[in-house]
Image 1 (tube, rainbow, N blue to C red):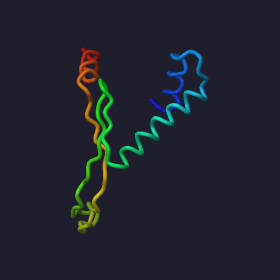
Image 2: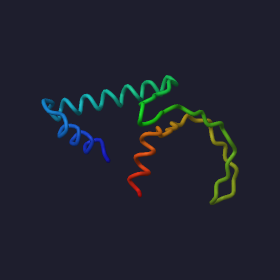
Image 3: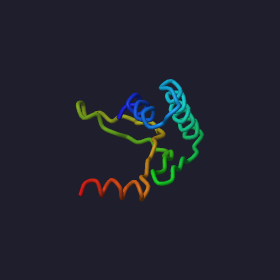
Image 4: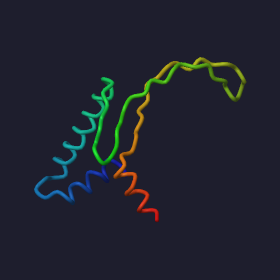
Amino acid sequence: MTRSVLIEKVTEKVEGLTKKQVETIINTVFEGMKEALAKGEKIEIRGFGNFRLKIREGKTARNPKTGEKVQVPPKRAIHFKVGKPFHDALNRAEN
């Protein structure tokens, strides 16, 4: 699902809000999430899941084409852990 599809679906479900208003709300939510993660804060959305920042250590890797060793710098990555209600709903949908 893309951001524009999400905006369309929310606009259909919520009466009284224009597409532009819904877009502003969704963009504000995503910006808030981005800012919180950039500060190292954890985001918990009950029933959906948790987002948190993981720091990946730097390492020595190998270029598969040349075999040359390459230093990979440390980096930050987002880790998502799905909530139990969401996980259960996904597994029910498959059966």
